[in-house]
Structures are given as structure tokens and as C-alpha cells.
Image (cartoon, rainbow, N blue to C red; front, side):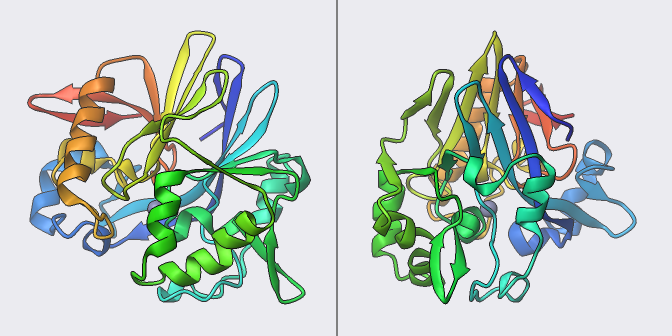
Length: 284
Ligand SMILES: [Zn+2]
């Protein structure tokens, strides 16, 4: 996506990784047969007919306002020990790419996490002399308290390691702000609770100069889930709530002039939700 202007808010995407993904790796319901009816509206951006795979992305959004330089979600990060082989001990150029987008780490004054999964908190910290330190030294890190409380106590998968290297260093440095799930970050920018994927999962609602947008986090990993609301991603913790939240989100935003920014949606990443029969599609 090019830089997007919503009134006085400007949004840019910084990609950490983008490419073909096996559909069933993330969405067990997305069998080859089940996807066939969707090829037409998903190709070429979100489905590649040549590889028969979904196109997906891991990226951050830079959100610039007259008052703040904000980073929404911080991807996977470098040097982190992770169970998923392609996310383990990465050494990628994310900070150089951020600089190319015109942002030095010191300039970021707000970091916002939609939730605390591995691919949304990685660049919260970086390794310096063997210690994990906040990557953005002048930033407040905003996260939903409910989300933090859940993961602080979780022993699930990589959770203790992720908290130890990517969340606790920020808390211990006094840089975190734990907030309610409908917290107003600043004028026109607020958390919108979208629980299910994780208990305190939030989308980020943007409005300025009459223009409206929503950064969805993992409310949907792939546009096909706006049609198939019941396709729940493997890591979602409450399947029923995940489904219900997505359905309600579609009902709220369908056929409105609201730009939807998918946190794992491949280029061009931004589109609108439109009613399609009893369900919904995502159109760029
Ligand atoms: Zn994710």
C-alpha cells in the first residue's frame, strides 16, 4: 500500500515478511475444495493461482498524526528464540526498512499492540549487550490490561518466552501503559475491543476529517474470513467469540466508507467490507 491519508492521520506499512502461505497452516477449514469458490475475488492479491497458496504478510503500521508517531504492532523481531523455525533467531532489516519509511526508533513516541502474540510484539525490544531493551526508547507502549493479565499467567506454547523477551522489559523499564480495551489513545484514535483471537484483542479505530479506518489486528488473518466468518485461525483461543466478533465487525462496517487495514493482509492491504448475499467480501 502507498501512504494512506485519513484526514490528518497518515498510515504507512512496514513489511517484515510477505509471501505465499499454505492456507491450512493457519486456517484448518481452508481446504483446497473450500477455497475454490473464493478464488475469483481473492486473486491476484490474496490468493495466487499459480502456487495455489494464500498471500499473507507480517507488517507494522506507522500511524502519523499532528502530535504523534505511532507504531501499531511490532512484528516478529530479531534474535528471538521461537518454536516456529521461520520465526526463530531472525536477522531481518526491519529497522532499516522503518528508517526508509522515514522513521528512526527515537522518533516513535507511541507503540500500540493489538494483542500480545509473537508476531505483534517482537520489535518491542531488541538485544543490546545480551539484554533485551525497548527498541523505541522514547515511546510509551500501550496494551490492553486484560491482554497483559492473560499472557502474564499463561504457560501456553512460547508465551513465557515471548513475555520474558518482548513484554516484560518494557514493563520493567516503566514504559508500558496498560489500558482498558476501549481506551482513547488520542483525538480520533482509540482501541476498539475485538476479543476472541485473544481475550484482550483490540482493533485500532481511526477517524479524522470525516475519514474513517480500522486496523484490525488478527480479527481476520486473511480476507477470506470476512466471507467465511466461521473459519477460525489455529491460534485463536475462544473460537465461538472469535467467530461472533468477526461477524459483528462485518455487520458494523459493511457497505460503509470505512477503510479496513488488515494486519496480515498482503499488498495492497487496505479495502472495504461489502455485503455479499448472507455474508461479506473484502474489496480493494
Ligand atoms: Zn498475527
